[in-house]
Length: 88
Image (tube, rainbow, N blue to C red):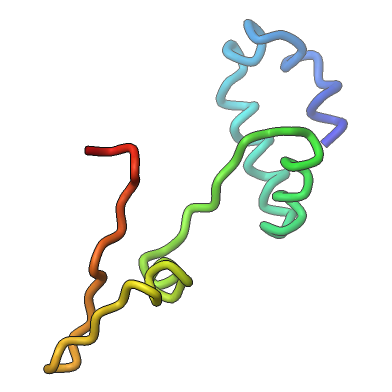
Protein backbone atom coordinates (compact mmCIF):
# COMPACT_ATOMS: atom_id res chain seq x y z
CA UNK A 1 0.00 0.00 0.00
CA UNK A 2 2.89 2.36 -0.69
CA UNK A 3 0.68 4.32 -3.05
CA UNK A 4 -1.65 5.12 -0.13
CA UNK A 5 1.24 6.13 2.15
CA UNK A 6 2.62 8.42 -0.57
CA UNK A 7 -0.72 9.93 -1.60
CA UNK A 8 -0.59 13.67 -0.75
CA UNK A 9 -4.31 13.62 0.19
CA UNK A 10 -3.41 11.47 3.19
CA UNK A 11 -0.09 13.06 4.23
CA UNK A 12 -1.33 14.57 7.50
CA UNK A 13 -4.13 13.81 9.93
CA UNK A 14 -5.97 16.98 8.88
CA UNK A 15 -5.79 15.88 5.22
CA UNK A 16 -6.87 12.32 6.13
CA UNK A 17 -9.90 13.72 7.96
CA UNK A 18 -10.64 16.05 5.03
CA UNK A 19 -10.44 13.10 2.61
CA UNK A 20 -11.89 10.51 5.00
CA UNK A 21 -14.34 9.02 2.49
CA UNK A 22 -11.64 8.58 -0.17
CA UNK A 23 -9.26 7.08 2.42
CA UNK A 24 -11.86 4.60 3.67
CA UNK A 25 -12.73 3.59 0.11
CA UNK A 26 -9.05 3.22 -0.87
CA UNK A 27 -8.19 1.18 2.24
CA UNK A 28 -11.25 -1.04 1.82
CA UNK A 29 -10.39 -1.77 -1.81
CA UNK A 30 -6.76 -2.53 -0.87
CA UNK A 31 -7.79 -4.81 2.01
CA UNK A 32 -10.19 -6.76 -0.20
CA UNK A 33 -7.23 -7.82 -2.35
CA UNK A 34 -5.59 -9.56 0.63
CA UNK A 35 -6.36 -12.69 2.61
CA UNK A 36 -6.94 -12.36 6.34
CA UNK A 37 -3.65 -14.15 6.95
CA UNK A 38 -1.60 -11.74 4.81
CA UNK A 39 -3.39 -8.72 6.28
CA UNK A 40 -2.76 -10.05 9.80
CA UNK A 41 0.95 -10.43 8.97
CA UNK A 42 1.12 -6.83 7.70
CA UNK A 43 -0.50 -5.58 10.92
CA UNK A 44 1.83 -7.64 13.12
CA UNK A 45 4.96 -6.52 11.23
CA UNK A 46 3.93 -2.89 11.61
CA UNK A 47 2.73 -3.13 15.24
CA UNK A 48 -0.84 -2.23 14.27
CA UNK A 49 -3.46 -3.52 16.72
CA UNK A 50 -6.25 -5.55 15.13
CA UNK A 51 -8.84 -8.19 15.89
CA UNK A 52 -10.79 -10.70 13.87
CA UNK A 53 -14.57 -10.37 13.84
CA UNK A 54 -16.04 -13.85 13.78
CA UNK A 55 -19.49 -15.10 12.91
CA UNK A 56 -21.56 -16.85 15.59
CA UNK A 57 -20.89 -20.13 13.77
CA UNK A 58 -17.11 -19.56 13.96
CA UNK A 59 -17.35 -18.67 17.66
CA UNK A 60 -19.41 -21.77 18.45
CA UNK A 61 -16.85 -23.99 16.68
CA UNK A 62 -13.93 -22.36 18.50
CA UNK A 63 -11.88 -24.04 21.22
CA UNK A 64 -13.27 -21.98 24.12
CA UNK A 65 -16.90 -22.56 23.15
CA UNK A 66 -16.34 -26.29 22.61
CA UNK A 67 -14.63 -26.60 26.01
CA UNK A 68 -17.60 -24.92 27.70
CA UNK A 69 -20.36 -26.55 25.64
CA UNK A 70 -23.20 -28.19 27.52
CA UNK A 71 -25.35 -30.70 25.65
CA UNK A 72 -28.78 -30.88 27.27
CA UNK A 73 -30.82 -34.12 27.37
CA UNK A 74 -32.97 -32.94 24.45
CA UNK A 75 -29.80 -32.51 22.35
CA UNK A 76 -29.92 -28.75 22.70
CA UNK A 77 -26.54 -27.07 23.07
CA UNK A 78 -25.61 -24.03 25.10
CA UNK A 79 -22.49 -22.39 26.48
CA UNK A 80 -21.95 -22.65 30.22
CA UNK A 81 -20.14 -19.34 30.59
CA UNK A 82 -18.12 -17.12 28.33
CA UNK A 83 -17.14 -13.81 29.79
CA UNK A 84 -14.42 -11.34 30.46
CA UNK A 85 -12.55 -11.49 33.75
CA UNK A 86 -12.40 -7.71 34.07
CA UNK A 87 -16.20 -7.23 33.91
CA UNK A 88 -18.00 -7.56 37.22
